[in-house]
Image 1: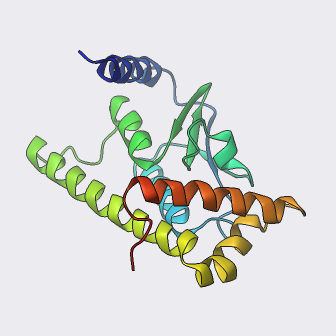
Image 2 (image 1 turned 90 degrees about the horizontal axis):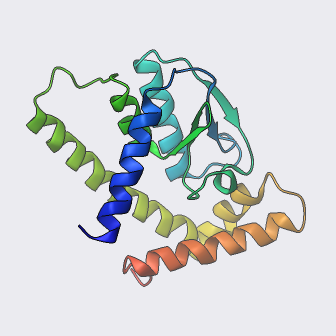
Length: 182
């Protein structure tokens, strides 16, 4: 087994053990949805809230300006259950599933696998397109992204943090061969 496989297994085992804990003191941390969140973050935050409401699991939404800095991997939304942190829509759904709560019990394993594959493909493509438009397209960055992302910070952070985030996202897009799309 490769080292990546070992690490993945350790993380999976740790989350499985944490899934056994009680569903108490649960908070969903999001950026300010009306002022700060960008399209792809807003969609993921709304999807997690909808999913948790559909499962009837109690939780509190806590909007914070620095959620992407609180998150261990920079991914939002962030679910905190007791002392466990889970980031991103798919990881939160997997964690809830490990607790025995599911919305797909009426589907076969093949249907669930197909559904997850389609969701993952669509989510990956749409998120990448949204990130490209918001961070790489100069006019959109200047008129929308920079203002929304920096809106919750005081000067000079309202200028510096969007610049740093833009550099990070453009590097991620470059890694995905999306740095020079027309």
